[in-house]
Amino acid sequence: MELIVNALIENGVQVAVSLVVALIGVAGTWLSIQIGKVKKLQTVKLATDEAKDAAITTVLELQQTVVDDLKAASVDGKLTKEEIAKLKNDLISMSMAKLSDTSVKILTAAGVDISAIIAGVGEALIQKLHTVENNKTGV
Image (cartoon, rainbow, N blue to C red; front, side, top):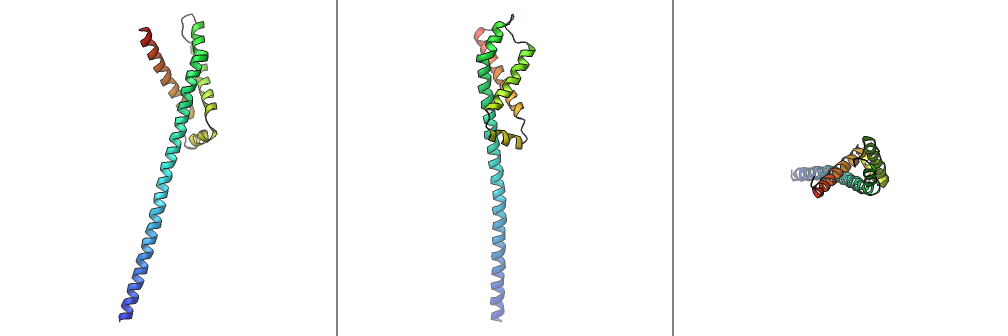
């Protein structure tokens, strides 16, 4: 009888150990998936930040090299709709050229509209620049 009890206990312990090992494996897999998701999000955020930085740099470049001259050449000191449209295209193409291939691939794979990010950041910065300029001139 004692042999049977010992055999049952031994088998029970083996089954319990097997279950614990299986649960650890499942938990480890789940944790790896969760860590992968967080890393993917961090990677997408870094690539998005790169796109935003490229847009900011490009807006400031265009302001110095093109916009001021166009405004000075204009009778009313304002840009035409055609000039604004061309500047927006220039902003997107010049910003895209500044992005690393890796960031472009990451954002594309994540389904991010890179042009929309660049245009949005550009418009926000231009609005901020206009506000600062108007505050300086008292308009």
